[in-house]
Structure formats: C-alpha cells, structure tokens
Image 1: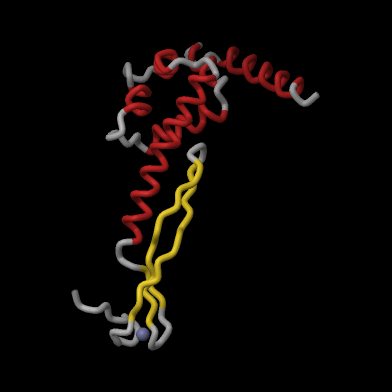
Image 2 (image 1 turned 180 degrees about the horizontal axis):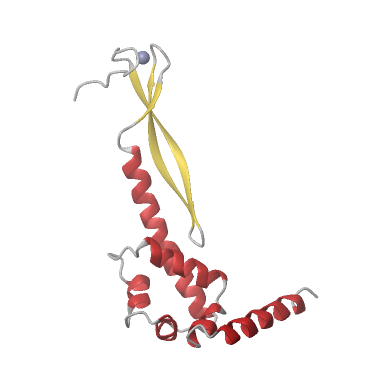
Length: 153
Ligand SMILES: [Zn+2]
C-alpha cells in the first residue's frame, strides 16, 4: 500500500495515531472504540482516518442493541412481561422478544426511542393498557407523583 499523503502539504510523512473514543447510549452504558488520526510529521496537520465513521457507527449500533436488551430486561424484572408490553403497545406479537433476543435485528430509531420512554416512565404502560384513556392517564400520573413524594421520606 502507498504511504498516506498529507492532504494539506502533500508530503508522505503521515503517521497514524490510534486513540480511544468512548461512546455512550442511554441505558446502554459505554463502549470504547479505537479511532485513528492521520498526523503529518512535516506540517503537523491532523485529519480523521476515513474508517473512523464506520468504526463509530458500528460501535453505536452494538451499543444500541445492548441498551435495548438492558431496557427490556429491566422492565421484565419490574414485572412487565414482554407479551404484556406488546399487548399494551399493540405491537405485533414477539416484536420485543425479537428485539431482545435476536442478535441480527437492529431495532429502528423509533423502536429505540419508544423503549427509552417506557424504561424511563414504565407506568405509561398502564395508560397504554387503557387505550390512552385521558382519565386513566391523569389518575396514573397523579398516583406516580404521590408515589414519588412518599419515596422522598
Ligand atoms: Zn503535512
């Protein structure tokens, strides 16, 4: 392979510096990927390696999968079964089970956003279960507020 050329000064005195980049995802924790800087030892110009975008994208995709599994497992451990959540949300049967268990599936951005909201406010499932009845929504919210205040003591 040819030595990389500095795109600023045109000299072939470019060295590759590998550094860690920490990625994070709500409810998914963090992951570290290795990215490369191309540094010109002649003029000091620093540029991104062309592969960095792909490395970051793959890291984020993996982390989103991890966060999806963690969100669903946390909801399961709170007593919300996967089947009950699918019913409440009117999702096709086994949608959440597949998001949780099938490594090859990458949930859509909308699916990830939905699960972040539910993981943050799990009681919204009771509202969904009532077909989003406004009265149920209001009462459930007030009950949650009361519950939160009681937990302050
Ligand atoms: Zn240069």
